[in-house]
Image 1 (cartoon, helix red, strand yellow):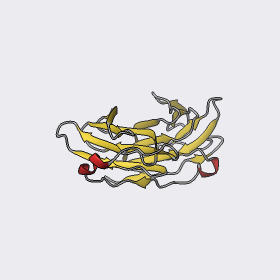
Image 2: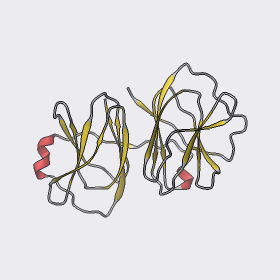
Image 3: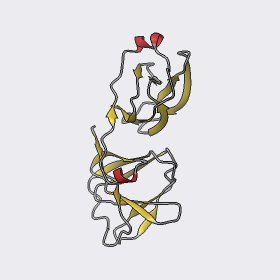
Length: 202
């Protein structure tokens, strides 16, 4: 299922906002590319903010099953409402960027295509000059192991990506990554680019 990129809109209050109906299921992912933590709240049918179970950590992700027309807001560490998100039906993802002037734009990430795994033997990390962010959106019921290829070309295992899970990893341009499907050992090789990158597994 394609993933829709939705905007993060800068606001100061939720006056007049309410959830309207629960007909169209949505799967919301928020990727935080800043060093600031945020509290995530849902705006209910009465226009009241309801806390979500988990927060949005610096350089972390937040995932929530919800519905289209159900607004969410992000509160900063002082408790002030900073941003509004309005999910659409299906899979949707929002990217909170470090630059404040980009926060209200629906920034399309760089969608990475896999490289043949036989290129692994000739691949390794080259430098740590250009930082980037890599988000893996797993739309399947399978679990994947996640490996970084270090400066010697050796695999370093990171946290796995579970079924229907989204994870964001801070990395660098020229640092290769491998996704390995646990139940079949099917593997794919990816090379992040500078900026915001995304791998979508269907």
